[in-house]
Length: 278
Image (cartoon, rainbow, N blue to C red; front, top):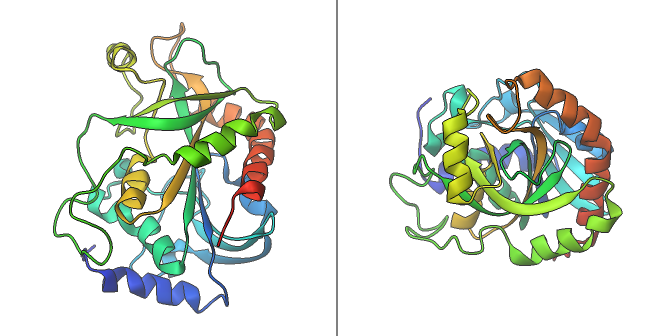
């Protein structure tokens, strides 16, 4: 896939999506592994397969639906990605800016990200939610590598409030409405698709990570670059390697995600209901 860093490249995606709607969505959702059920709650949905959108990407993960859904949720105009893109699918980091840049051009102000993650904090257990307040990206790579288009965002940009403090406080204030335990912590990015080794998890725990996963970071970096507010929440679907006896497999992730999805959906809708939009 030929890649272009300039605004016009992403404008082709936005033009196509705008042709299907007559409003500007203000909240964007990117739903992680087995968490796509929230998309079913969107009213008057308009569904667009990723493959139909010019200059966009295609999800290859079986548990990801691979479609963009626009409509209304909790009285707010939203755009929802049911399924995301990952580095381990073969995409370059620079390509993974596509969803967030599309959202920005559509008029989105706030991005909500969900993912499935492995618990590193010994106080966590599968089925917990973790509001992400910071991250560790040991890979060091950035989707903003390469030429910068100043119309999108600055060459150098701050990450201190990448996980918006006000949105985190809102999510914490609504935790009592959720039957799942709600934690707050640091997310460590690992490229995957293999799970981490026990030694890597010991290292990450020493470094201050509370959970780890294979997504989300490129989206957060891209949103920070173009000045969008971000809230990210992990569903702890398993304890990370070496935290418990036995190995880890993807089926375990899906089982916990499906078991927790209904309550997670209720919690996300409560948050969306309370987000102020212009």
